[in-house]
Image (cartoon, rainbow, N blue to C red; front, side, top):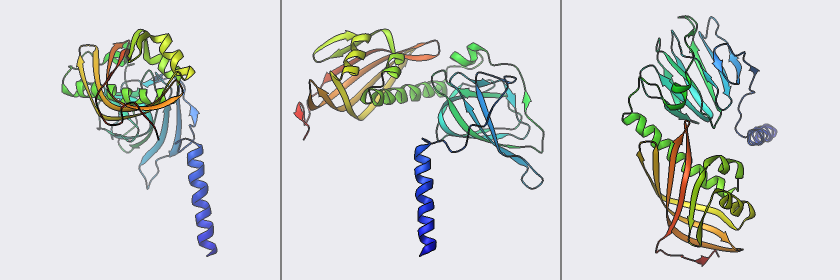
Length: 290
């Protein structure tokens, strides 16, 4: 019984510690010198290679905007994305967006680069075989390659699918930021000329931010039933079918909406240009939350 008690206590401590660290598994380590990368990058070598285990395992943490130079690994490399949002691109292929939970296999000898997105940092665990030699560092990633994709890559299906996933993920994050009244995130997302159309009227960016901050409209919870996106050039149109639980004028109400969102790509970032609510007929319309 004593052993069971101590095991239970240990598990509780581990669980609490994990929650307290907000998902950080390992320390960031030391800040790396800007030799083979741009921006702020921290490295923590968890397990160096030896005679038995002929591969090294490290954690790399990137600030938003940080990225490695083009490089290759003679023995290949595997990246386990543990936090944030990043980019991965192989020579001659489309730039891909990677997120927490993704696994990236860098094939031996293939030129590639990876790093954080402009808006989000990224953290990954990298494991690299060392018996075939060390990393081969190449040229720096240009601003064009980083911001809008490699000029040698075609805007094919994979690139389009990647963009669609990015926009839908951003739309989902937006509902969370609105519920949390995260003004800083929303201010960065909304274009300066953005327009917001509600049942009670329409207005611009600053009034929407003021309404959210003051609680005039509290987007408490949006249950998204269906979401789709259509990309036309540098414009993305998102249609959401939602049930919105909101607090308006101190009253908590639930309504079904079709929400139309319009985004434009500006300097490598999606910015919201319009957000429109169209009320639909459905159960629970205008009904107070019980």
